[in-house]
Length: 157
Image 1 (cartoon, rainbow, N blue to C red):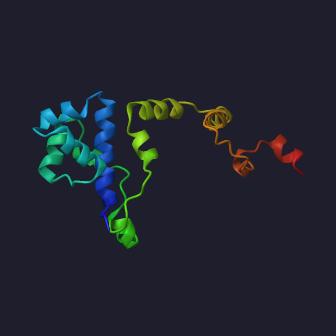
Image 2 (cartoon, rainbow, N blue to C red):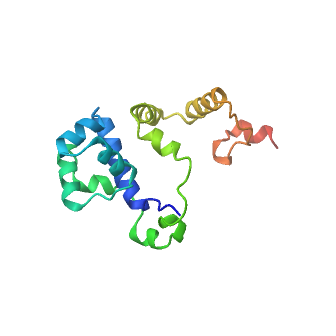
Image 3 (cartoon, rainbow, N blue to C red):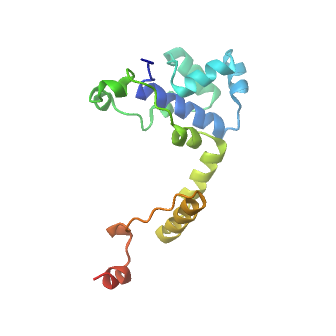
């Protein structure tokens, strides 16, 4: 069985990748600044290799964020302790981690940040519907109760 990365290591690596992309820095440039190959940076970002404390401090200085930045939103120790063994890295590696990978790209980050600036829930829903339709994965699910307007609720009675 192939060992998969620990969820916390993956999270820390993902945050490093996100920050690097936000700064417009390549893996090669980050590697040069740290005295590493881009392949090692890749392994850190995927959580394949753990980032030691001194290296994390070096990365945080290079990416201009405090070390705590890398742990924001990470699963807690207690939550990690409650995970099943397969979730702690003793099962086969998932074949598709494309969502997390996409969100760590410049394109994914840009799309996510732009979408977050849209405050109207109706506009957000229309965008989701449009993207789903363009992707050929239009879902025909009933709207959530919280998404229905008063007119929608009255017409469905």
